[in-house]
Image: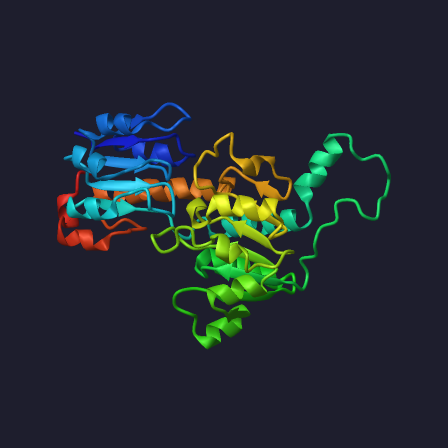
Length: 336
């Protein structure tokens, strides 16, 4: 009998085709995500689950799938999965780290440039037939990026990729993270360590690249936004709840800071009543960090291979909870 797999959304090829070659696949047919109850119903007889970041895979779902051997998430983030509950049940978890690094760094720097130079404002101005004079010395004045100071919060893979891009703009790059880099690595990357408060005070641009944890939730709050220069710009391509959105709205409305570029939000999709939608000094994107054809295709391939590896009784290429092997050895997951 073939392993049974539930996939919560259509992902790019060749992901689904790889799984269909050796498994019986049930695919959620809609663009809208399945409800919690729908996932519960489908998971009861499944051997494997391929999910997305927007699917809440909590203990209730995990316990509803007595045959589950592997959960593969089409994401680098895994806060949507109760990892501890899955590990206790002997369920392997695969994810997709590293793949979206360059795509997300590209987007972060695009937001930085677009916000600094008021690109989307200019586009709206032109399309709204506001351009009446060939040249106006004060029209939509932005701020320079060349030679300014960039502060990076969270210097992991994506943060380092952003730092490398900043060097091309002759930027001074400051960073903060729980464990500072060795001095020689700082020198090679061209970055300098600062405390969190110093980074907010000294940076012209602050870019967030930290995971969402209990410690980082609302890391960017009203008090820290007030530390920023009135000419500074905040960029968030990490996780929405890292920023206290209500405090950010106030900071933008009252001009504590000059602007923000956001790809992530506290609630996704964004509520149509969210005041951010009515502010001109913020650039908003619908969570496009990894949205390149190349990155998404590779994420799909790795997601499929993570899932299939476990069903073959092999270690998944990108394996989150390696301690699970003590609870259920890979010899007991082999179905293919």
